[in-house]
Image 1: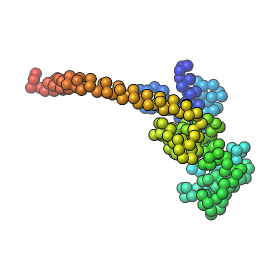
Image 2: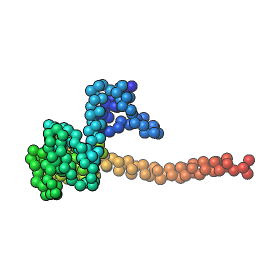
Image 3: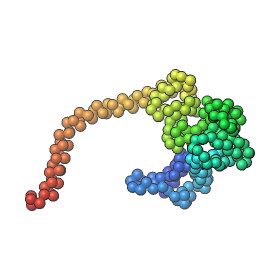
Image 4: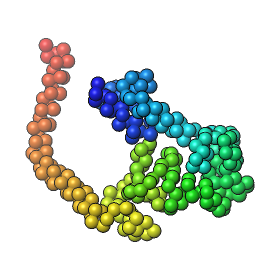
Length: 247
């Protein structure tokens, strides 16, 4: 029971409100734990955190709801139904800010979102600007806040890895070469020695896997005739067992 409780608490903190799946690896139904089960096992504060994260995730995934971009407002605003991806005006019911449903800046009428200059009090908080503390994941569009630390970000919702500054895909950049050149050079947030040590570890792991493959491949080649013979004998035994003429 203690292990299940720890599993739930860890899933709440790292799942961003995602459904908590059954921890049993052999569960054929891939079941989802019910909220009543979660409430019985985790502390009240953890359960309230789960409910809040779940609600925030529902709002982020809902095309007809969005958050007010004012930092101190945190009001859920409803978006009028229309053409998908087309900017519409949204008015916050609390602070009465009128903003664009797409770029979250002050409502710019018929102007394109790209042509509209950034409004400092709103655009500097939510957006893709280099210094914005809150940005959207390039894949699932969920909001992510970064206070400090490494610029290599991993979305807890979809597990996509990207650069915080330019939002470039880093899923396949295991050596973090992205931060060796270009506008994001030396902006990783770690010392050069730390980056080199990380690359050395990655190389060591790859070399180790290569050595294991080289060592085991001759053994597999030598053992392959025996494996083939065992398979053939097994097939012959099954064939004789099901052949009525042999009885």
